[in-house]
Image (tube, rainbow, N blue to C red; front, side, top):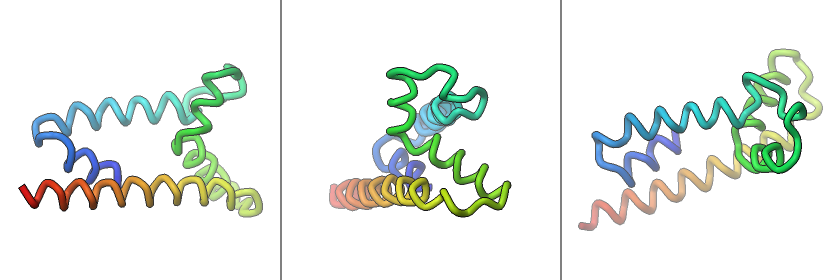
Length: 99
């Protein structure tokens, strides 16, 4: 949601759809949804683990399995990205409203 607000604050309304579609594809590729990130390893895996999408997938897997023990780190990582995106979207939206 925060990324959607951020895109809406930065882009024109006709640009949001295509860019959001690209974002969904990037999230699917970098989350490990279709393949395990361990299979690729290296720099690609490190980049994917810096993004929030792999952590979101691990949270979902843990929730479906009912194993809540190792989810704290993933939840904090995702909360940090969410807070940063919401803050950026709010600031950019307010800046856009001042024009």
